[in-house]
Image 1 (tube, each protein chain N blue to C red):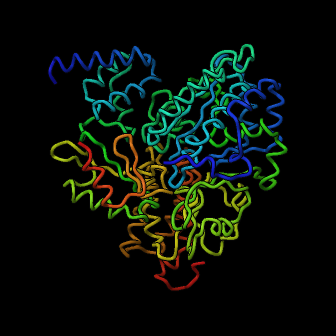
Image 2 (cartoon, one colour):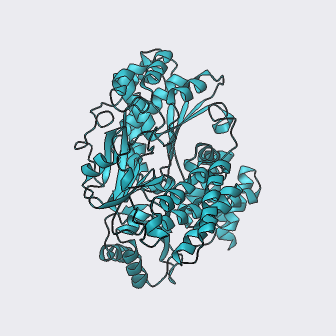
Image 3 (cartoon, chains in turn purple, red):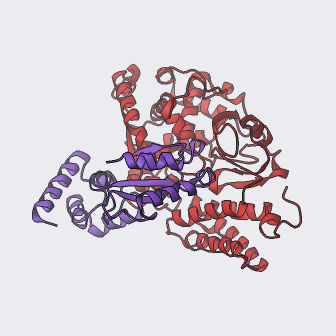
Length: 157
Length: 401
């Protein structure tokens, strides 16, 4: 990480701490914002958050490692999560996943080489009446067919 | 998603309501009178555990502390449950008014909605809604003209951990820690968020409170059975013509429910989500009620073409992944149960080992620290018991309900 990048990240985190507070209960809100913007939480960010919240960096790491939506390693820019719960499974999750894998050329749990997509399974997205369901970043798509799902992904720049 | 509020029909929650109506009524009443109405209604927690709401509120109201909190548990992670999504999307007035009433009764200054990360797309509309409430003086200072009643609501997002639906894990998460359940006692009613008395209620419970304040406890009791009063929102999914959220009185039988949603050739019904029990045909006359087949609202329907072992495997994979790993019975137990399912799938099992795993399941129900491990063996035990001929006897025996 370049010094300028580090400085920019520090500045960003200082801004977040000022806005969201420097007590422990603000930790997840801060992590959420960093995750949303950078798609992961770099080591340096963890250290800076720990410094500003006056906790040990390992505390920050332990929280990140607990939650499915937070990760320390970079992932593809667009996070694709297909619901794997039984109701979506019965409505054709497998065909959906196979089509996506073929089309964008990477397996679930991996990112594409150009870092455009990261594929993941999700546990119940709460859309069981409108399955199969898929979330791309913060948006959800329902009643998908393999064709529709692929078209949605192809529309993303 | 479309807003179907106009089309929905029900006896209690899906009835017309104007924002702020119950708040205005509540602030003109004495706190004890509201508690009495809720006690009279016999309202029980709608998340699934069914703890009497009035008891929880009385304990928190009686606790002496300058700060108290109301937490709305919108971490709806149970597979097959989506009623809270519908309530928050179409009926935010019922939920938020319920939170304000709770704040008034208990003497809390702040309410927190713990919204699961998967529902982040609901956040902008909910924030706008809260802003409107502030403009209408339904949040903020001296609410609805009541001197000294100051209260506000904040929405916090979860980060994709199923276990955070457990109330103490949820509080840990709000405090910025790993979502690991706490030892109880002390209970959140005395030592909750930030160590202060805290009420944690399900989204639907709070919506019920709004209706009870509007119409009274006796009115609420008109529906349901003597032990399960009122109505329940059921999230119905799986093999049926009309999946969706329905309001039905407690005491409805599974057969009635299946008729209503147009389900045919049904082999199995999973009541209560992955942590609930799976019933076969011979049990379809059972009632949905706390005293019979209790549920947080998840009903999954499986027809004759479904492979129940595949269903069980899906559930056990879910629990193995979502166990927080804090206590041994849950961490190791779920792994062992999943291994057992894989053994059956590969035809590589002995009956004595499967029986041992059922015993292990019972141990988990007793020894796990929180509800996750206590309820995860339910589907393992009930599916292997109710569908043993299909799964273990390869279709012989013929007693699949």
